[in-house]
Image (cartoon, rainbow, N blue to C red; front, side, top):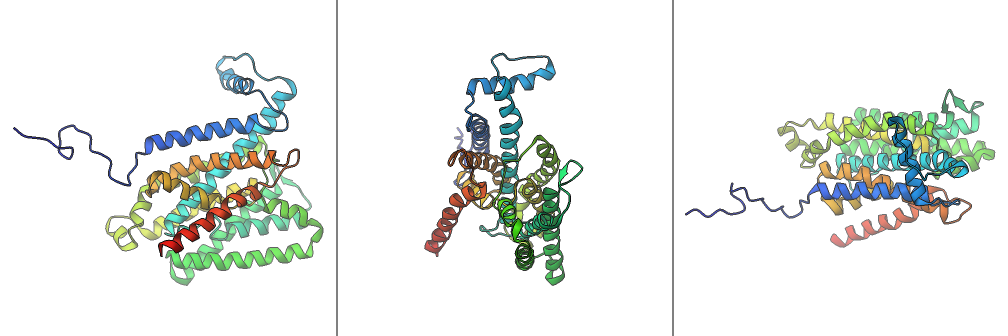
Length: 362
C-alpha cells in the first residue's frame, strides 16, 4: 500500500512555500480598499452628501445607457458637486496614485534599489522646469483643450528622462548604476535652470510653488480622458514585464542565460514608467513619496515578486492618494492643503524608518 504525501501527485494541494503568498485575496482586498477610498472621496467634503444617494446617483448614471434607472439619487446642486467636482477629482487622484506607485515599484525593480522613486531619472526636474517656463513666460493658457502648464510639464518630464537615458547610454550603456548617476546629473542641472527662471520672475513664484506641491482641485473630466490612454498603455506594459523583472533580479548574466535581454528590458521598463510618471505630473504637479512608500507597503503584504507587487501597487497607490487628497481637503476646511504636503508628512517618517531599519540590519 502506497502512502501519498502533500508533495506527491495525489491531488492533494501543496502548501504554500514560506514567503510565497497567494495573490488573489491580496488583490481582492486592495481592489476593495480602492473602491471604499473612492466612495469616501465623493462622500466627504465641505458639502456632505448622503452615502445612499451618492451610490444611487452613480448607479443611475452607469445604468442609464442601458435603459435602466435607480431612484433616490442626488439632484440640483448636490448632483453637480458630485458629478462635476468630486468625481473627476477622486478619479484623477486614483489614476495619478496608481501611475506613480507602479512606476516606483518598476524603478525599484529595474535599478535593484529599494529607495528609487518615479522621479529618479529627471522626470520631476524636467516637469518642474517646463511648468515654470510657461507660468513665467507663456502668453497663452491652453493649446486646444489641453492646458499649457500640464502640456509643458508632460513634455519637460519626457525630455528630462530622455536626456538622462542619452547621457547614461553615451557614458557606459544601459547599466543601472550608470543610468542612476546620469539621472542625478540631469536632475541637478534642470533644477538649477528652474531656480534661475524663478528668481527672474518672482511675481510668479506663488503659482509655481503651488504647482510644485501638487494640486488636484482643478481636476476636470477632460483631464480624466486625457490621461487614461497614456496611463493605460504604460501600466499595461509594466504589468506584462513583472515576471521578467523577477528574472532580472537574480543578475544580468543569469537573466541573459534564462532568455531575458537585460538592456532591452531595462529600457522598456524605464520608458513605460517614465510615460506614466510624466502623465501623472502633468495633471497633478509634483507629488512626492507615493512611488517610494506604496511599493514598500505592498512588498510587506505580498512578498517581493514583481508579478504580484506591480498590480498591487497599482491598486494600493490609487487608494493611498485618494485618501491623502481627502485629508488635504478636510483638515483645514474650507481651505485646502497641497496634497504634496500630506504625502510628505506620511512619506518622510516612513523613509526615515526605512533608513533606520537598514542601519539596524547592517
